[in-house]
Length: 403
Image (cartoon, rainbow, N blue to C red; front, side, top):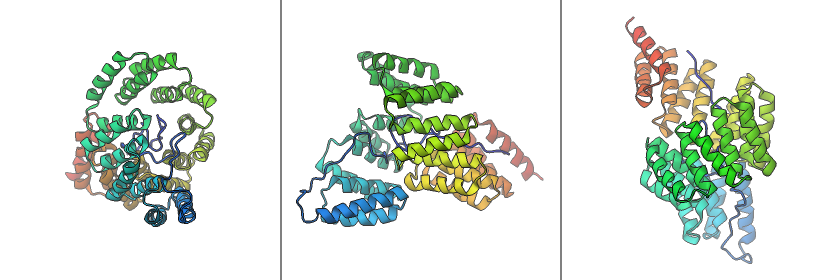
């Protein structure tokens, strides 16, 4: 029995979350968007400004360390002093989201939108809250209000993918691309959908159209690298990331993705260097921490691998592959109770994940809980009828159950 680990690539300028190789659920962007600063509506001469500034600074430091509980306490105190401070409410929404306090996160993001109703970044984050609550229509509405934000579009693709409705989105954006074929972002958007559908040639063609119209389109180079990486063309992928970095040296997602391709090539120490550089640029980039966990597991450093997977969870509890990676790490080290807990926690957030069901099935099988294992393998096959691994394991446990 085996379980395959994942390394994750951010395809757009979205933290933890853009379109990911090991995709992540549509969710609020936990990073600081490029050039994104958020004004405080409170008067700078307010007698409370010093106190709230200190609380906000402390909350940011706690959030960066993954202490979301501490950050939330400080932000609630700050919000009580300055309830219309956008920076406070936005960060409060982020940490409440990470704590899976979704109604509280929604309240905080709506407080921002009450002051700044056109804030696309916060509409994207609110869409993430709705997605986590399985409120599909509300999530779609919020993500659409964030457009033309790349982050919101990436999450829209993921949301439609989860629902098995990518064909609808493809038809919509084919029409949009036809209406304005000279707009690079229309080609980029269509390429994002094609990539999610694994139509790599079509995605590549659209990205080339986008780059023909804008040779400095960093996101297009990054996404093209993702496509090449999925095709196993690791060196070609790295060249695309290098091109993006040459245009924007602070483009953290390309640094992260460069590290992923190095791991795919077995260059683990070099991968660590790239992931750490991505974190220097984006301290809350959950994917980079998860990838460090994968990297350290390849280097047989169990303690560091667990540490970085947990750090990723603290920053983004909805990152799809982190529970697969953490559970499989425990599984391979025969810590079956911990593996079981990791897979179950992941399924609580992503009940349709065939890989999580498969991992839980393997864990039950190793514990000789054959009836439970059989149930999980059947669910995995129902979610992905082409899952030959699950079918093979199902046959094995059915055989075991007869003896």
